[in-house]
Image (tube, rainbow over all chains, first blue to last red; front, side, top):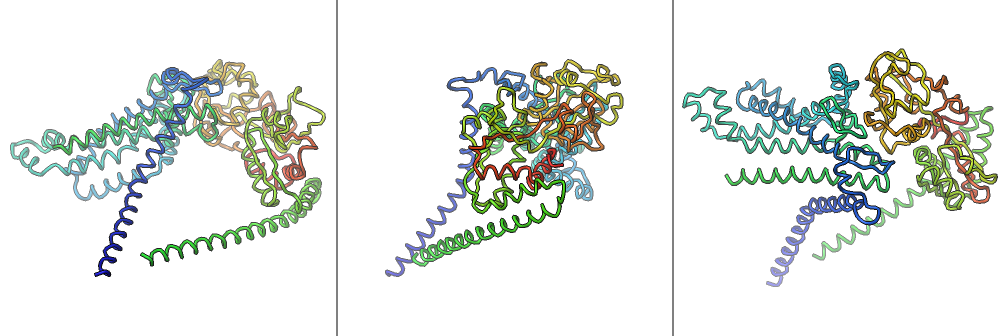
Length: 298
Length: 317
């Protein structure tokens, strides 16, 4: 009796310990994200308060970045980031969705066996290699057709980002399309619709929320990309981009380029740039959360 | 439960013991490595540089013989441009002299010199000549390297071979935007600069007087390193950029500046305008024995190897 009791106690204690281990694992991610948020916001908001504060309006609306003259304007970087991301989405989503349709609905098995691994491989290529590809191939080609003297441009960034977000868009859209019940297609085809009509009128609308999630994740990837973009963007110190041939300096590259040697006010301003980037990423994530919730309700 | 506790305790003890063991081993290893390195350095210096570098050999030996009783902390502050070279030298020197600790803080050349004068460091590091108002009889300087910045264009740009500092200032500030204005063929200039915190950029801008000319043009592209600048210039026949001497190769064409070719010799002699010395400044009475040994080490063959690694121009050849 006594022995049984002690065995039970032992088991309970053991259960509690294991539970604790699970809890710690679960908290690791949460603690990390809180720590990063606190750290970035603390460092990044510091220059806008207290004595010798920098005007937040000047920071958010300025179009010139010159730390040596105490001028920190990130508006042209926000514009660069947003335009580059928008461009990549506008080109990348149609290509990605059509690829997904092809893989899921039309392609013969043999073609799928080639296309799918190729796109999956695209996802595994390190971003620095995308940058090298952009600098070695995309930039020289753009230089030839551009009215400007250089090939480093918004267009180069958009092209490379488009390639980079393709795997995300394709694989998520493909699963969304495959998840559409067969009965939808059968009903549509049964009513006399052609295959293409079926895809665009029945399948894609049903897979809409999945495709939207894919798009939002693509936005997240595009806006956060740093290394590849840094090598092909041109990164000027001032000026709003006024055409696709203009050079841009996205928020991420601004941080990456200067952080290694920065100190004092300049470093804090780089964190402030990070805060802006963080806000964008949070908007993206909240949108994603909303979308997936809606999907769950259905 | 008890079993668990015992096991945990045993585990902790083993860990502790292992840590102690490791500690002893690593110190032993370090000492051994240091002694080995010392003898190696000695023989190397003796065999490799028989005649020309005699002074350095003696200096190196001097620091070796003294190293037995060298100890303490040497505080170096100053130029951030010398950071990479200094950190390498520091690692090498500390391996040779385990009891000496070198502390380097990059705070800028002017701050380094001021610190030396106020006595808050043992050695100040600067990446420029001392200004007239900074000079003092008691304040000694030792040049340990030179830095040269080459102006590069695309090899396809055959029209331009020479450029002046004024023209550079005008190009980088955006006053000159076409190659025809500096003797080349008609074509817009693609200006490639470096990121704000780059030591090469600050040296370049200081040497050509860009601040007075209005600062870097907004249309200039910014690349995050010597390599990317070189790549950008190599990939665009209308580009102009600037890099450390060690980044000159077949893919780009260095320009002569004010008629002077970009070579190590001409940079050392001061004839090449876009060059600057890396130097230490110190007072004899504040430098300490360990600091003096470090100064000797910096110009020894081993110290100069660190200069080589980071693209500087050696002073010993």
